[in-house]
Image (cartoon, rainbow, N blue to C red):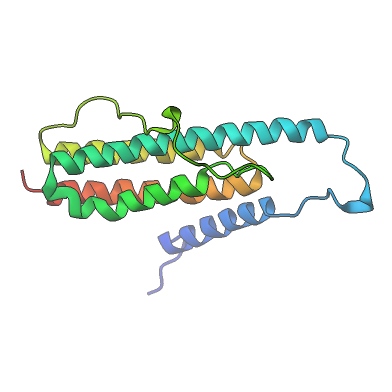
Length: 185
């Protein structure tokens, strides 16, 4: 006998279709080139560019903190290092992708400045390897939440990038939770 009513598969399909529609709505092109006129809101663009740069810089700083935390956990608990390597590498790539683009004519970064050193993560690493990996999972969840919240103020292109990084951070949180369960004490 066929089941009637809403099934889980049907609900997920409908939710996915709604989400896809919302994303595609945000993917529309700008109307700046229409008619060859200059937009009257060029001052708003400068403000938006500054806000986007601030969002990107914060995301990069937060990613650097998370990288430092990955390093501390791997150093304190070498048995977890193999499971952390691919996740740490992904976080490093996210930092590169989120870095503010260089302005035209701006020279490439040379020697790192004192400000460029990665910040130290807050607090010591737990002596228990399971707890240390769970703390990393919690940090990834916070990162996913922060990127999701930033979507509200980001421009369309940055919002797509932040959404991807937030999804990856949520996946990392899940994988770290699983790794914590598999880690021997």
